Amino acid sequence: MRSRIFITVLVTTALVATGCSGRSNTGAGATTAPTATTAPGEFGDLKGLCGPGSPSSSPAQGVTASQIQVGVFSDVGFTKNSEFVDAAKVFTSWCNAAGGINGRKLVANTRDTQLLAVEQQMQVSCGQDFALVGGGAAFDGLGVKDRLSCLLPDFPAQVVESNNTGSDLQFNQTSGTSYWRYPGFYKWLLQEAYPGSASSVGMIIGDSPITKDVGPQTLEGIKNAGGTITYNELYPVTGVSDWTPYAQAIKTKGVKGLVFNGDFTQLAKLEQVLTSIGYKLDWIDTNNNAYGAAFIQVAGASLGFQNNVADLGGIYPIEKATGNPATAQVERLYHQYAPSAQLTLPALRAFSSWLLFAKSAASCGDALTRSCLVTAAHKETAWTGGGLQAPVDLSNPDSPLKCFNVEKAIAGGWTPADFKPDTGAYRCNEPVYKYTGTYTKPMTLADVGKSMSDLK
Image (tube, rainbow, N blue to C red):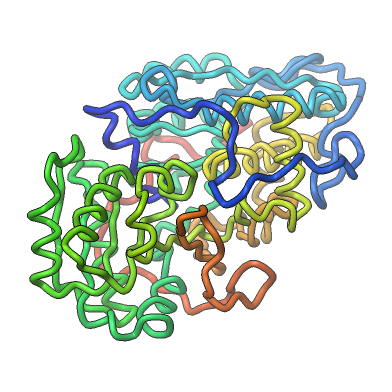
């Protein structure tokens, strides 16, 4: 998910988001670190990712006989949210303990963009790193031109701005920019679970240049799913001191289902007002940015009154880790290498990106070049991150997502909703929807005067 996962960062343009401190799951009951059952260097169903070797060459920038340098973008210096840095620490510590990638140790260089220094940090990365792995920045679009100009492959945890989402040399596991991300989720909401809500859907979005495409795309997608928007409002990303006018408008309009794209702390305040005036919606789409213990804490008593749901986009739920070997293994590695860090949904995406990078790099052997790396990653037509997620096709950067899974927020935490999964924890093979509107296009190599033949 592009802006929906990362949209809370929008408020950091004026208000620092809550930092992560203390390791926790998503508030649905504590999990324990299971006993290891995989061999060193193996993850889930992925074999031979990390291990010893005898490399002898320095075939590319950032690659020597002893190490591989990669960049990890993060706004950590501004937001104080270290989830991408933590994920890099956990993965590289685990991989290096197994011998590295064919004997080369991974070195993760944190590229702290501090919100607005994306271009400067990209220029530094262009001069040192072999690739970018497991990171993200709120204003990532500021760096995409430089990244493509220096032919730097990108394996991001998440992307935000439209010109970067699905750009060339990028392996974004939720790309498919021509397609709406949530057709199955909204079909379930509007046609199956709460068909009475289809006639009156409301939408509130944080007002920022970053989200300029989000509103029109959401309107188009909901209309295709059979919904009618009867309330459409923006709110200042710096926050709202009194949500009462919004709540009263929602009640007056008779809104039955509400889409909220913004900071979940602001959503919690809105829900508290809605609850205090006794107005209950059929559902509230919190977006999966809210999926975590923090929303459970700030939403408080309103969770017992309002029906909060979120589409995780095919990522196995953290609170059910003991039921999925790959998620349980991540939990175990966090316990071992970063016991005070928080495992979050973006952190899981980061870990999956690290796994993709490692598998692709390992397949190149001693001759680890960017060309080999990119070619290998493009061969993944059903990537699952070793079992962390539903399959995604990385051979085509504009492939639609085919699976979804829905979580519900209750007083005790997050738990899977009754969305009738048909493929393990997911519901797959729902009809896809391709946008008919005109939106910002991702940047290509041709835009900077390059082509794939320039990649060495």
